Image 1: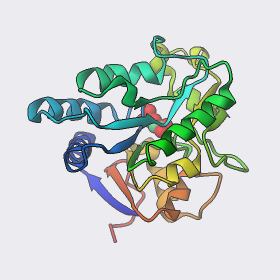
Image 2 (image 1 turned 60 degrees about the vertical axis):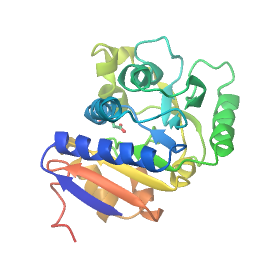
Image 3 (image 1 turned 180 degrees about the vertical axis):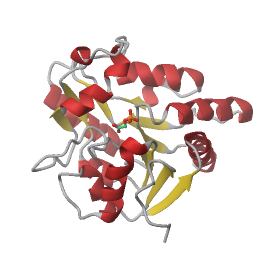
Image 4 (image 1 turned 90 degrees about the vertical axis):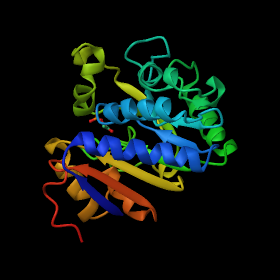
Length: 246
Ligand code: PGA
């Protein structure tokens, strides 16, 4: 894994947005795995700015988001689908049918997970997946556990994860769904390239363990050590427990 530390989160957001814009220009039919959450907000804003300033063409780009809450669909404000629409999709010329999303309101959630895996496979897999990381070391919604699921599946969310998502539900943690659908570890690790972003001191411990610790299901992000092409982008607080870059 390579790591880069930026002086503040704005610089990280700018750098990652630049890389994504360049990746789209270099490979117009790129297949992206995309995250939601607080961390990527500034990056999406900058990516939209670059897209408009440089007329970046999203017409052949395909995306698959990492996860979605069970019970929520695109019209619900707390859904990740609504998040992505507001922050990115409505600002770029991506085709609606090129947007891959898990449907948290599907009647058969197991079939929905299988459909998602097939859709990713039919797109010839993910070229680049962008990830955040939870303070507990989760990626996507793959929470610390005795065992991890390989492929897209249904999960019960940790209390800490629900608390971290309360801001999308007007600060009311009780309104955060208890379950979600998420890409599995193998889905993520099958991506040809991975970029993980982390900001703020609350992430420092998980980042440190991911980079320096053993590979353990108790810290799902540590499995990224098995991937040959992972870039880790940090602001200074998130990188603070690390030794000088080697
Ligand atoms: P956050 O979430 O960006 O809201 O901190 C990241 C994650 O849980 O993956």
